[in-house]
Structure formats: C-alpha cells, structure tokens
Image (cartoon, rainbow, N blue to C red):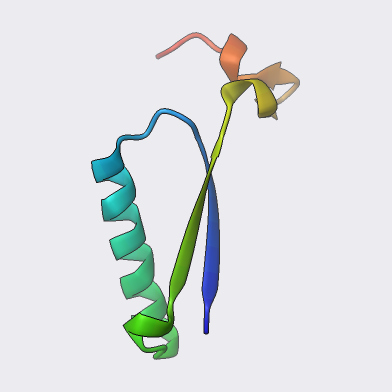
Length: 64
C-alpha cells in the first residue's frame, strides 16, 4: 500500500490538486505496479508563512 505525501504551498485550486493526485497515482502504478486502488496520496497545504528558501519566507517573496 504505497502512500505518497506531497507538501505544497497554499493557493492551488481543487482542480490542480485533482490533476496532481491523478498524475502521482498513475506514476506510482506504472513504476512499481501497485494497484491504483491501493495507492494513497496525501496533500499537505503549507501556509506561505511556514516555508522559506534562502532565508526568505515565501510570504515575503514578490510574485514573478
């Protein structure tokens, strides 16, 4: 029973999350042969105030 945990920054749509879990489930199924019905995907939304890269909080970064 494979379990994949994916941590992403908050703000993704439900549709994006649906696509993500479908792709991850398919990748696990194809690569290790686990039955789709046995694959669990957990998405953990992280607040931007709880994530930093190079000493800068994601909440402090300016959008591109």
